Length: 435
Image (cartoon, rainbow, N blue to C red):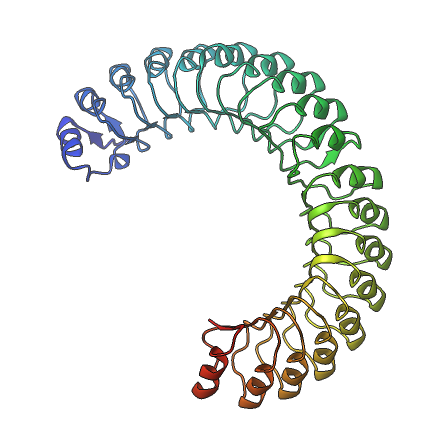
């Protein structure tokens, strides 16, 4: 293999001008390392594929971030030298490394990244727990023994274990004693027992939970008012009811909302994102009508008359941006909605639909419309409240004259085409915003 050496001359020039890209070099000479060790800024040495003991000795004296992400293996002596480093240390390419080497690295103070490691032995975990101080990223580790979890629970700094999918209840109990940020965003299953342990931890992250026991949310909700992202693709009433205690809920993999699940989620007060749901059952809509807060149903492509009737009784904010068109009956129901209503997916509306929607008081968003007839403009001008038509490409003089009578705020985009005189006239009106 041909190496591109970072020599003393390059190192001196870097210290003087900082214009040389250190990451283009694949090998570092000892005298260059001695010079770079005095640098008071980050060293991006991600091009290095090998590192000798003398080079590591000097780099271990550097006190800023040190990036060595292409190094695949190191000797125990090199690990010992790098363990003396103070500051961020990235070794995200490290795969072939002995247990003794990892123990030596644990002496390092500052952020330590070892994101290629797939396993952490109990002895290595003990070393990290006893010696390392600072954020520790082990984002490719797939599993932890109970003993390893016990030791990592003593670690002094943020701990990132984003690829651990399953934890025993005992391991969860040990990790719950950790007192810094604990990132378990890859965890797929949460038992009631594990949740009871994690309940006292105020800085823990979940985002890929696929299976959760009904009692788990009950334990977490005291310290997790914002809820957590998840990948649940099926929820029972019991689980939905427990999750409803969270202020923020999002279900990116829940494609079918059963009436039982809707009944449980309807108890929530806050933000409820169900954008992945593609079909709305009438019975589910009936239960959701009692939900209070922001309800996002942007995945719904078609809404039955009955579902529209029920959803019109929902309060606060209803987002139905996925509807490409609506019938006059659906529009008539939605026209009775009392909260903020977003129908930005509508590309066109008939005059009769516009007439129905005009009866709605409050915020109405129709940003998907690119054109509007004079008759529809006439009907919508009788709407009272906030009306967004930010997608309109052009507006006739007659339509503009109608909108001049609108009571409330009226929003158009700055590039809308209309007669200059009419645009200036609308701009002069209170509540009209163009651009």
